[in-house]
Length: 374
Image (cartoon, rainbow, N blue to C red):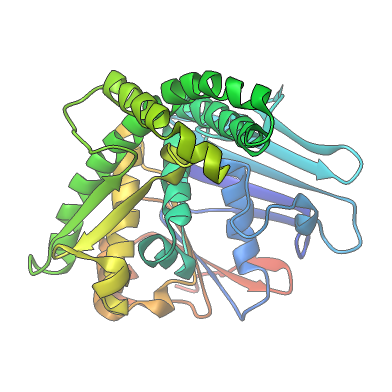
């Protein structure tokens, strides 16, 4: 996949901006608070329909205006794709994909594939289970449309069941409908767990290789999926459905007493181990960065295997966080991957000299291509 052109209108600090990108590495450089990350944010929204910084589209509108528009042209599998995303205070959100208006913003998912890597990505390694679930959900939603529908349906079921649990402790009629919710939850939740297990299995294989590369075989990694039952990679969807139904039946009274949905993939997690130790507790900051880097590249290889094309990689202010060894490792892994990097300098790295590189100076909501004098 290759992004060709991005057009912004009244988005963040951009009144109007047109940006043509290179197939290789694109560097957006300039001082802080000039709009570099806003470009990556617009690109990511075009891929997922969501911002990595806010849940409120109002925040994306340029100050003093009442609407914004993002247009993105990209080549996917040798075909041009056009995404047009609009939002206004009075009409709300709308999206067009290749000239066809879509009913749901989530229809964007899977059209374009992008990976966003920032210093905050470290939270996938050292943060809460919710952050790792989100990481996994975004990856699966971009590569499997069935998963998106399953997740939406499951979350609705859990929401309705939670209401029934709160009322069921005091009103018998609500308690009686909970087994009905559990029947549907076990079907959808079992499928989700099965798909997550397979995704973790694939990521784990890629990540083991990457850790060996960056550490010269001195360290090893392992991703361990944690869900409502013991994992057996040889089992199918039916196994997970039955196990979840069993767990829900056995925990019926406990859920009623606690008035909470205790069992199901909404409480999933996956452990990231380095040398058989949990990275959240026993790894140094440098080791956590190594794990984050290898996980992002594993995500890239995963998407390429599923979709048949490499995704676009968005790197937001990460180079300053990495030592030279990790910088070299990352850049070597970006062979034939379109990459957009934000940084405060021009990144005059030796490793970039033989690569296709296009630089843009960002200042006060304007992106200016740098002309190569050579």
